[in-house]
Image (cartoon, rainbow, N blue to C red):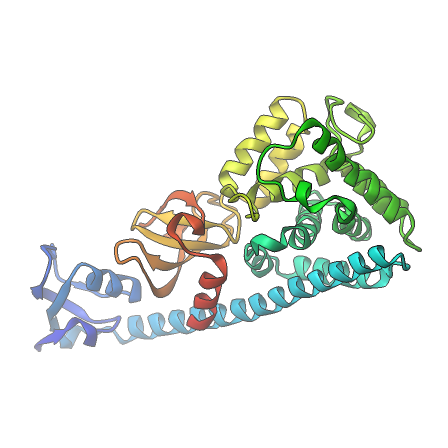
Length: 392
């Protein structure tokens, strides 16, 4: 039995004989079933309005499978966004902890290490169970809170990379503490130097470099701090060629952990927005890290391992798809690194948000055209994340 139907009335399992009305020029080469919602949405995008269907060939199993897949994807989306909310709360807590540390330093009172240990332990536990939501949430950055957010981000990257390298969890805990505290000495750096938009003068740079010495002095004064946490924090600006600071160490004088922290620190500094400059894309940051490695300033083998850990398109990064849509990377495909799992949310043709669509690029026709930043399209990550959470 043939019935003409509006495309909006069609479901998966429907057998389409021919197109009867459309705004485009798409040609259906043969009669075919609508296998899933992806196919249906594609037909709608092509401008198809009405179709002739053979109701006697409706495939109930295909419809049930598509409905089950849709329900599963909806469940995954809800679970992911719950984790996003939890991740944002953890980041907010980290900024509160950092503010309290700065207050203790300014007042000359004893720093409580307990709050830092609790925070980094929760961070590590989150990373070891499900890091994707945290990686997405860390991209929601406030330009005027760089120092507060940088400490948490570097601690997170340090823990994530160390886990990838197979380092023991007990050691990762101490390294994460050192990473969280590595820039704490900047509280003693004048704001006009810390936030200067242009290039620092030689004298200003000498003052800036002292933040590492200040960090070492402050960390040393914390009761219960481990030697490992202290040592790794003091090495994040040392370079393999001996041109770093504060000690001018070279080669094997710099521990493996110190080399790891340097990479994490540089990567976050490159990709983060600040009050005086926009961050780079993750892909561009990888290129800069490789150049530094090839120049002998940082450990190239660890840079390559870091890129492998993060993925070609890191979770939480934004990409432009060939379909002229923006998407956020939500999952890594180990078998197909250049085709991750993404969630498309914005049409560049319409210049507007659209219904979010989770896509495994390894199983579809769409591909990544380039790595981008929200700023490129006058968007911000906070706005994007609010939309994605509301969609779920």
